[in-house]
Length: 188
Image (tube, rainbow, N blue to C red; front, side, top):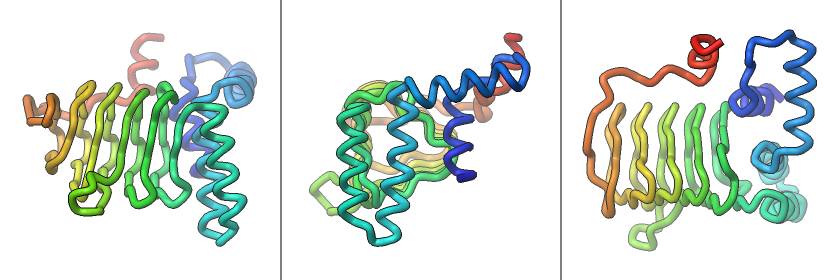
């Protein structure tokens, strides 16, 4: 339950309103936003998968795909704070290992490259922007950003930005970017 709440918190920004307004906003978004429903259905299917309730796990995965356009395998391991920005076209494979506060945009694929049969290990606070592909038995370090439409086939160090096809390291971030909560505090 804590993981689901962390996921919802990562996708529903507190804009400085009172707790009641934030709660109502969060409930409405859970009911209406396919991207939030995709994460909740993934958590439910993942729990069923761990409890060996495989037909139910795969059924929930199918419902997730119909509602949100995202296909996240129930065996994938994703840390709390999972944030889908736009759900259409997201594919995350069964052996993917993803850390905390993973931010994922539309069209992202995390999976097998068919070369080695392995899937990526992704660190904490990684941002996978629109259309990027992270493939094979590679590792992505903490606080990395994968650029739009990049095809990542090799390791990406922590605090790096990877862009291009195939992806190369273009720049290093001097420090981790502030969280969405810190940005919201500054704006309000």
